[in-house]
Image 1: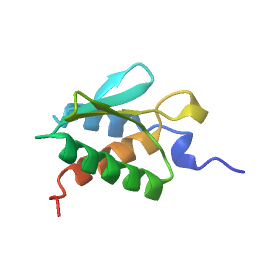
Image 2 (image 1 turned 180 degrees about the horizontal axis):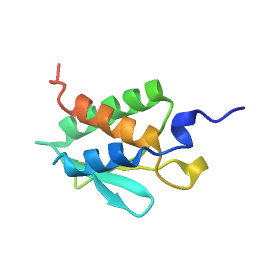
Image 3 (image 1 turned 90 degrees about the vertical axis):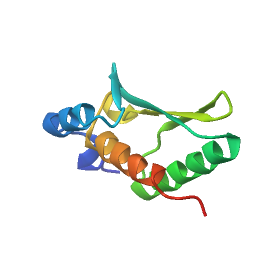
Amino acid sequence: MAVPESETRLDEAALTSLLESGSGWVRDGNALTKTFTFKGFKGAVAFANRVAEAANTANHHPDIHLENYKKVRIVLTTHIAHGLTDADVDLAKRIDAVERVPPG
């Protein structure tokens, strides 16, 4: 099975743009991380579920950590590439978009 191109290459300019955008994503070695804080447990879990849906749609799956009952830490990396790829940058942007979805 062929590996999608988005999981084998990294557009450094796109990564730099994401990191410098003020969105809160941070490069941590071979990963991108960001922590989202919600008013409570229910909001954090709802967000984690939206991230899971976005990840399934993208066919790229992050580590999702629910911490201190109202924080969700996301860790993105492409395991097959042993580091960051366009798939991680693209999913980070999708995750930012689903954070802004009003509950309902």
